[in-house]
Length: 511
Ligand SMILES: Nc1ncnc2c1ncn2[C@@H]1O[C@H](COP(=O)(O)OP(=O)(O)OP(=O)(O)O)[C@@H](O)[C@H]1O
Ligand SMILES: [Mg+2]
Image: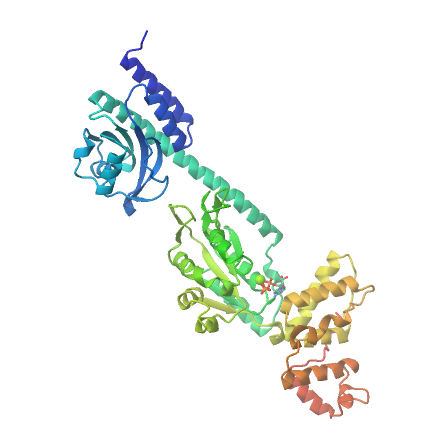
């Protein structure tokens, strides 16, 4: 016995509402609608369009039936479309003869005509006065929808509203879940590279000045530019700034601009949607987004590719961007800390760094002095690292020979604190007894800086004096002292040493 039309309608409604409760994707929701409504309403094209009212754009969320060739998810102008009319009136729109409709944009009218669609009905997807889209039915028959059908379609649209809201909420939850998963990985990295502010060792005037700058800059939200030679502790300072800021509950996200090839850098920062480019198999959250409410540390910003600099600048200016292949604008609130061992100003002059980006980044510069510019910190650092490695390697090292300390203090440290730390690590490994033994080749100047260059006279003199001091076991005067070896008076040697910043390691010997 054939069911009467109202029973069929009732059944269709039941079927759709059941599907809507469990449906998490708008795409499968539209397919469900298509199948459930076919027996009761005539239509050849079904679509869900969403809008961004502020921007005057809409996009096709999902469709079924006649292929209009519109890309799903891509922003399309709303002007002169059925969706625009629905949005403007807030009322359903019925057009019995699409061929006679004068409000459509010519290309829209042509597209409709080319697919042979003759009548259509569009119902708003709205809740609480907020319109976020429309549900459209079109048919290849003229005047296809009598009032009874339209009533049913309004009813369906109300269900679709809820289902779309659910699907969007679900999407957001999914996104957040992914974000936290990603964030967890970073956080684990964080814990390993744990921050220790008391790790900034040093009491020299330059270090004290630097600490003061850190403390001043940290609580503000302004961009900090850390400048220093390699191994001076730029990353340590960046982490300290994050820890001392109000954002210390957020994540510290690091990106080394020189470690990532330029083509990947963009997606690393912005993230990308699934399928944004070959190889983009899954959606990926970028570092900008991950650093939301936290700190983004751009290491080696001097290596940031020139062609991407305008993009970076734009994001720094308003914190808004789109993922690659995505149309949705994402807002991220991050604080930028950048570091470089380059002289950005001269890079700007040479046209290798954009001036506008330089000014945006160089808001609060914190220079870190090279180790050779604050030699009085060296004994402290040496003891600190000896203790660190001795503990780790379960060795008991009780003293550091005076000559060794003097040699450490007077070395030029081209690799700065990282090099010092490595030298101490090697020394601790090699030390058999209780006195620290420094490998002979560890402090060879030629390995570090000279590499075939002609040394400035003062530097050559400095090294020559240090050599003499070393062979005299750091005794300056007397018949076996360095002055005698050099054939100059003790007082002459002393004043040269003072001028060249050479210190005899008294008071910083055996600790
Ligand atoms: N003031 C300091 N006190 C103690 N340890 C320090 C200090 N500064 C740096 N270090 C240590 O020296 C090493 C190098 O520091 P860091 O990685 O921060 O330097 P960097 O300037 O970022 O180097 P690069 O330019 O090579 O990236 C790290 O092991 C760090 O813990
Ligand atoms: Mg670094």
